[in-house]
Structure formats: C-alpha cells, structure tokens
Length: 86
Image 1 (cartoon, rainbow, N blue to C red):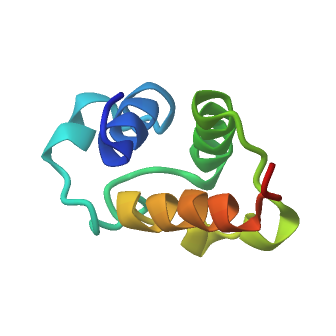
Image 2 (cartoon, rainbow, N blue to C red):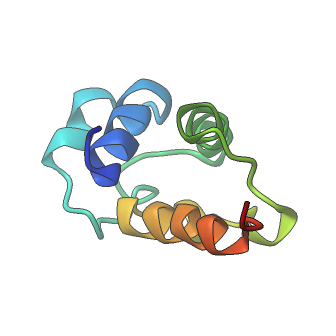
C-alpha cells in the first residue's frame, strides 16, 4: 500500500482543482493559498472518504482539517483512534 501522504496527494490531484501542481507542494503547504477553493475541498473530502473508506464526523468538517496534506493526514489518523476495536 502507498504511504498515506501519497494517497492523499493522489486524491488532491484528482479532486482539488490543483491538478499536477499538487506534486510540487510540501506536505505542510497551504492548499487554499495554492488555489484550492472551498467548493473543491468538499470534493476532496468526498474523495478521501472513498479512498480511505471513512466518514469525516462533523467536528472535522472545517477548513483547518483540509488546509494541507499534513492536516488531512492528521484528521484521518485521528479517525483511526476513534474507531472501536474489533
């Protein structure tokens, strides 16, 4: 499996409206400053939910959760903590 940040980068490439420009961004780069719109962030969220088979809870549906690849990774990793053990 690809490292999580590369999977996130792939989702961003497909859904953020930034296209291949995502490839040149650092993990902590501000995606909104790079040109991602709030509308595109909804598409990114849906793409991430599909890619990682997760659902973002209401408390993560905020700009800061999607402002960088590192922030997205942190949000996704926080969901793994919230999942009940089986």
